[in-house]
Length: 272
Length: 270
Image 1: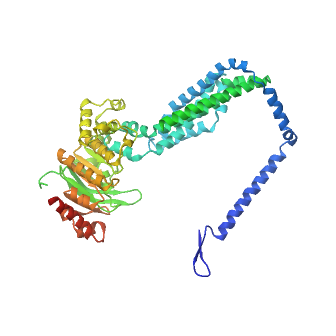
Image 2 (image 1 turned 90 degrees about the vertical axis):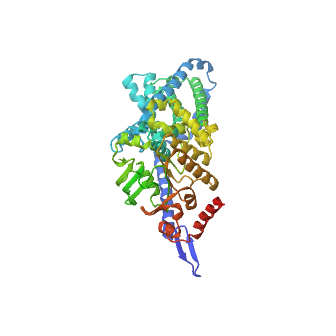
């Protein structure tokens, strides 16, 4: 804010000082220059010849994908069921581990801010920093291909997600409700279950169905690396250039995700 | 107040210094005999809230003694402190009900200190607790609300539930923090009247933090004035005059405040 005096003596107000204005414009200039430089960099590493004929290539691929081979769907029900189960069991496992972890990580419920909380936070960050697909790659090597690797991959990624969002919700509760129960002479465990759990219940339900919804989508690709589910059929179909089958798989995945979105929206609406 | 009555609550040199360096309480000495309803008045930041929170150790005192029936609460370990807290019911400005639990659950939460973890988890409270809960809800006119969720209630109704929760503890002392600050004037008077009646019925002592001087004068026999962590006035409600208010709050034209309280008194006599 800059206040100065006009020649006639009335106060003048500007949002910034002239110096501040100049700095803001300089900042925009730097931003634009950076964007141009980046585009130059990307352009140098692109074979534009392949890009120019992208429309033909795309049209060609779509042409090969139609008409879809709908009979193939009969072979997909089982993998699709596996996919949904992987997502659901993975989410359940993540809840079992993530919920206690959240209480250990939240500032107001952790047994020790110095010792326990940092460990819990590191576990959460470690879990969140690695994508399910990479967890699956590693687990397929350790456990062999199949649904178990997929379930664990989903769980490992989801633990951090659920624990992080839940511990943030725990830290935002109304402390006077907790104070009131403490004042009755309730024990620490009673204060937790009577004062804190009811307050974070809506957040917990929302987080869990949201993650389940994400996990259904993630589970559809885990098969690409051998971790079970419909992704395995997708990989096989692409490798054999069976494009009409790929179309059927895409359609089924789209339908499944739509259903899971609808379910999670209903659950969230019902609880909040 | 009989002079030889042993105090229910006795504070000796109670001091609280917050980690920020603020001295909220500066050597407070205070005695509350059994069955006495006492109003604690003072400007914002005088330490009223800190004082009642130091009594049940929601805030840890820095120095001094808090004796309840002769037992020094500041020395108690966790288990003993929990047992001592059962004898002190607390009532809050913003009601502090667990919003997503039912009225009945909120009322029964007053018994948590007497109930085991799993019994409380499965909501299996002893029959006599449930009977008492219904009786008290009926006493404050909320029996029909038992199954409602706490956040469905109005402010006055919530404060009644808060009072019932505190009474469920079967306390000897009530710690009441600004019970009417979030309520309209009519509901404020109803809540104060209810509090005082219930204290008389059960022979309960109470420390009531309150902003409204007229309300304090009307409902409490004894008034204690706190300023910057020290007691600067302690006497019967009738003796609270302009000079005393100046000592508590600072220089101001108090004639209207006093007159309002006196007018209310005359009205009642007439």
